[in-house]
Length: 256
Figure 1 (cartoon, rainbow, N blue to C red):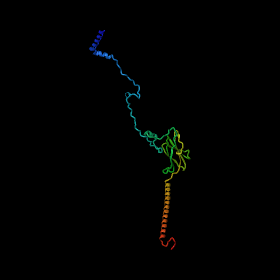
Figure 2: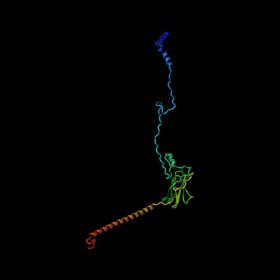
Figure 3: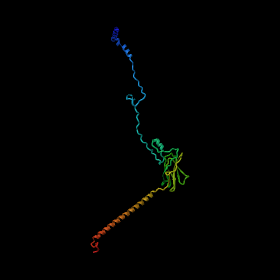
Figure 4: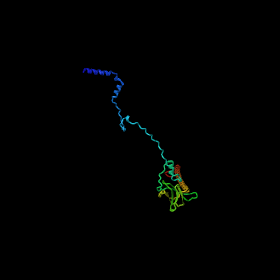
């Protein structure tokens, strides 16, 4: 039994000192016998707020935002009381300006407004009356003017006109203007009808000014005359008082 232990010890000593133990074949055999540990693969299906910084995705570049401020739109240079203007709808398409609200052609137009009934003082139409109006915020194909007492003889004018002659008429005659399109016509209103009244002439205004100035001058003369009269009376009373005190024959107790 002792000899077996001795042989085993000699065998181990031989193997430890043998060059075969340190040869590349033996080393390769030993290394391949070891278990190989693969790195753990982690699958990320979503990002949570509590993930570590090294697991967060890189920041995404944001597209630049256009911060330029558009200039405010301006109203169109359109006056509804002027004749033969370019329609506001065309101005809108050409310049991008703002037009007032306009009802469509499928709706009856709103009523126009009369600016005045003025007598013509010069030319061949002297003595006749001219009507002036402003267009409504509606699509208009023509205008119609009705004079009181001439109900069956309405006057028609084009959509681009803003004035027209209505002939001679008496003071107090009612005149109305209405807008017309394919959907109908406007209803009469307080601002689309007016009664004719003679305006004051320049001669009448001049006469009234002269009369007013004359009355004011007359009142000033009266006031000045009263002031002068009071002043003269005051001086006369003062002079009489001075003369009485300087006369020795004058006494408050009677005549000496």
